[in-house]
Length: 320
Image (tube, rainbow, N blue to C red; front, side, top):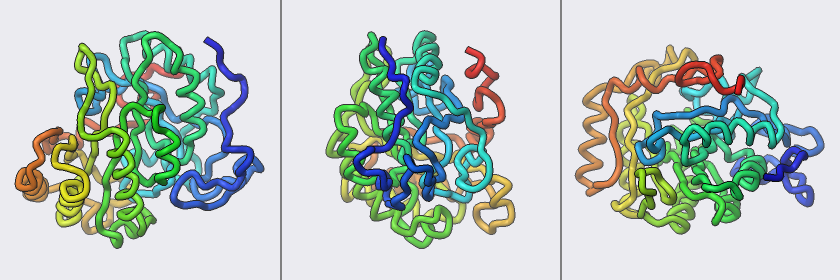
């Protein structure tokens, strides 16, 4: 397999970065970092097998997830705050494409059938470079875009035929909450257009392989936040009204407060059983029948620590 020795870069014909809806115009090739504070190379927090995703996404052996650093959203409550912040240092490893591919290949050799790209909205050229380096292998892995849905339609359209599985969040239908908690008052409008484009590309059907691992499709995630039940209901209603109740929905209860929001009236506490139940009732009332829900003790299961080389399990990835 041939790998390019050159680091991936934004389009050299258009050095002003317009990859994501921020459209901050940073000349990343020239050293400017823009809103996401990200340069043109590969900055990766971890490459690891992850078994905590939805069952067909994890597959029988886990998914080979690539966790990029920084983010084009700045959610106050982000569970990946060790790697997602745009201010101050983050836990990161600067790799070139062949190095990253070597780590991914090792995980594919352990049985992973898919490669997941986590929070790639601000590093789409880097993601494309990794896909190009891996696409010729046999068997070809499924490529999963695990995104916050703060994506432009133009960027998503450029990924048609490259991304096999879209795994987006739908965080808000309330612009005030989106502004207050994620610094993105336009999130509802932007995410709506993004999800419509993903649905256009993939529809509602999941394609699985003989082991039950996903090969193609769309799964929409929603994390229920404390004190924001009406926002969660509005997100489900939007999916039902503008896409379909045939869509696979992953309704998550795994919220756990981070130190950054410990003093917040709502975000500083865990989700109450009655809050999650109210959203479950709405899910059923709307007629959704495909997807997954979580137990209320899930916050104790899904907390990563990126100070370890494997954030979810035992240390493993950088030594391979």
